[in-house]
Image (cartoon, rainbow, N blue to C red):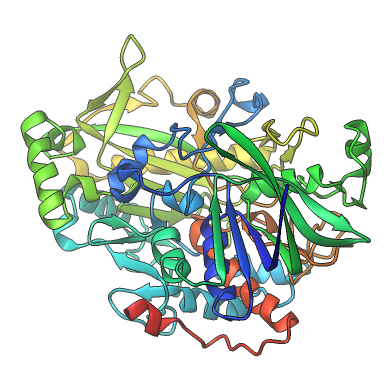
Length: 554
């Protein structure tokens, strides 16, 4: 067994881990080890934006998790793709850049997360970002993460039509979902550049991977955190070369930082004896720190498709016909534009499901593409569009817990979608809003039949039954190592695991409540802020205004 010495050990080279490694390794005297269970991000489908559709079930780059049977979704198991590759989920996601609402972060601060209010986290969003069109009070330039608007030549007519139709239903036009307000309809901002995905591997990690004080190990499956006298002193991990498995121990002089995400971080804590004492005792795992909140507080956005047929307007159906597809392939490799440069969604909307809501509580991702399985179960494209809608503020709570002491065994994921009447009524109202948008005058003369849910589905009972049959995760799970000061809090406001020295969690699992939108940008912000906390606690003077602009430019 090899033994290695480092100052900082980062577990997981995903959205948070790559950003954290970039910031911590800037201090040349600090040795940093970055461990990733997956491999390099060489799959060409990672870099081509539309290629994300081919990564959702690919075990070469994806953990391919799924929930246990969900009671309110017809006992179906729901797929939970999570990146198992450099860049983590930022290498397989839909590339949509959304921060959430001011109230999300102010809520974190009020729940025991001092220093996590919106005004305090905004500088970290700005420091992370390079806004291609220029910065302002809310957007930064010079940061590693490229953020750009949808180029005019890449906009498809159905997308413009959807925005116009949404405005006809009373929603305002919103030119910047990360601006002063989130409500309205408009185009998303994207983590793409010249038709290529901008993951944290291609941005943050690209800046630092050649630094001599940073060691990157791929194919490294961490087995447990090493603990001595109430302190994390390292990790044990396994690698495999030429079909031979080798066990390694890496020791940390300063800190171990878990960036495994909402599933792997609580899993590793429990495997290391940190979690609910009774649960760990039942699995014959020695209890090091009794923290009943580990793995609890799971939240996710459940999404429902409304698929509307269109005629007389070009959608993915027309663009993917053999001749058109050949032209799109040629266009992409010549210019970085066209169909293959399309992210998961170009346009969307944020709205309130009822007048009683003080802020938007639903989100739409719209794509000018439609499909349905044929008799054999193979997906076939249709001339139409899809608007998938999710409820942003679910009150249902689930959990992630290990099933045994074997690190190779996937944890039990119980999302408990639609476990409350509040969530059920909100998602029904959200589906009705999407239908209202498709019924707007803008689509007159182009509207064909509604493929899903279909005309037979009209009452609340029928809509809820359809949701139970068809709804899926929109891949935004958070909360299983929540930050706060209540009895279920796993980390404090500086992301330190309670009762264990030298150990922090730095990823989306620390969110006490889910943000209002996509979770990649907030996860990167968490890593940016955590990096300053780590360096401050080490006595290294840092300033939030510091950038890596000179490295980025080069």
